[in-house]
Length: 283
Length: 283
Image (cartoon, rainbow over all chains, first blue to last red):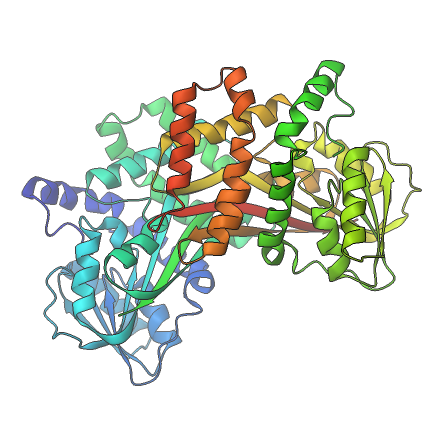
């Protein structure tokens, strides 16, 4: 991801260390990103279809979890998928190759300093990127420059503050707060979903339409219990365990209880709720 | 509403006093209930259509806000709408008469002790009632008795714990917590939306499908800014002002700041989120 390139050095260095916790470079994290994409594909992506012949910039493609979906949903469009991490790009390229997809090219690029000509893309797609951006408005402005007039931008983000569940547990909420606090310490914002509308507006985009995409999980939906609650959300929280304990954000007993309570919501009488947001606007 | 009939006397008496705050007997509250129904009609009710010739029990019809929608959506069905409050029933009858609706009959009844024969209804509809019920499982069991085999039950509830907004404000959350605490003190549960699935399951219903109905508001949706955020949600919170201050749940300065912060979310760069839940199951 492009995330921390432009921050003060200390933050960058911390970010590099954190990346394996927050961004998904471990084996389990990589699996998580793909689980997330598979489980949520319909909810988040089914209405993103680009016309044949159009050129689309995917900004911050990461390990390619969304790239595959995008490219398969719009086989006639041409995708330019960029990321600041060479390691992520290699994984994304390998994934796309494995899937037999040929309408994607990859470039190493920094969202804040894109090397493309002004107005060179018909559409822009940004998913799970702004939450990690230190200056999300600057990122949007930089993206707007390379977008042609009347071209569209699509922004998808989650909002960790939208999480609630049954049975209730204030301890489980504390473990989630660790994830939010660590992301904030890295200059990101885990509560960014609710801000997509004002951010697109402040960046000068037009015809902004933001729609909520709610994930609701109960035991009648075992695919979501496994694919979302356990393998996406709880895995993401568990990913910051070491850091949260190291930073003293939480003590170990509280952490273990909170994680146990999160898993408790995946039982027969449990429910779990989370909101994503999708914004579409034009230049 | 049927709400507090079966509770210990002290609670009943408190409930009677609270009703004007929590249940909607004041002029503004009555207006609020109708605003709510109008704004949310599509989101909550558009997929509730009963076949001609079927008999539907609306349990806890209140002042008839939902009755009108139900009866108009299914003009060939026959509705029996009950409430424990004579005052509410009179208002509901007047409203239905004013709308020229003829497929509804009203009865005074207590959900826990319904006077109808077993299996006498094809379908049951319960909306914004269980949140005020002291024993929601008993209410569901009592309703199940009067439902015919294979008949359906529809349950709609909100979840105040699903509320979040932009700009964030912990003070605003405190005013909402007053509403939650007061409802809990009356034996109700303002966080019941997330529990519809386990409650229907525990009551022995089958083929349970719960779907989230998310209200997302930003300034591109002025009808929701007025109709939901201001005239439904904030009005509902403001309805417990006197009680919250009397009970010492919050101090006046914090209250005023919290309400101001809630209104702040209705400005150009604000957003507001709330989740309802709709459960449908069969006997």
